[in-house]
Image (tube, rainbow, N blue to C red; front, side):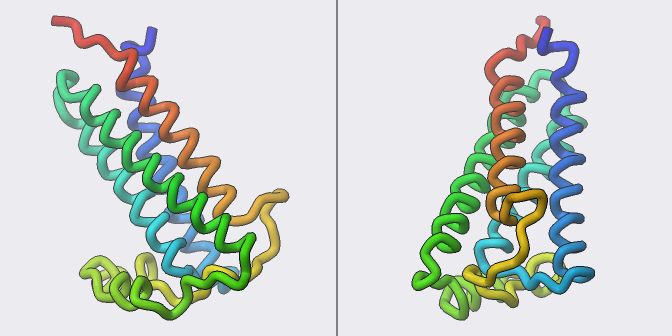
Length: 162
């Protein structure tokens, strides 16, 4: 059954990953929520998941399992970053503010090419109002988990017809 929906599911995850980047930009540019270094790392994970999904969608079906597995790995990485961010917010004495991570992240060529999307300007411990009851890292974790489970199911259950 998963064979019929494998490519559409991968495309849906890619589009949702791009939507998560758009939400991040909205929060930053419209609601003035400055992204911290961990936010930026999560954006990279959303971008990687979306890029892998788009590339996999356009590759031959023989590459579908590998692409889905790679996308699931990118999503799991993002989930790990979101968990760390959630932990930092729960322990306000810990900071990821202006430190070597922020400095090095802002030197990556993506941050120089697309500063609005990939430049860290905020502090991880800054408290923003919850969105529908969840903090931003919690929402990111929810979406990374959805992406990882969906892509892992495709990778594990897809059978290429020879």
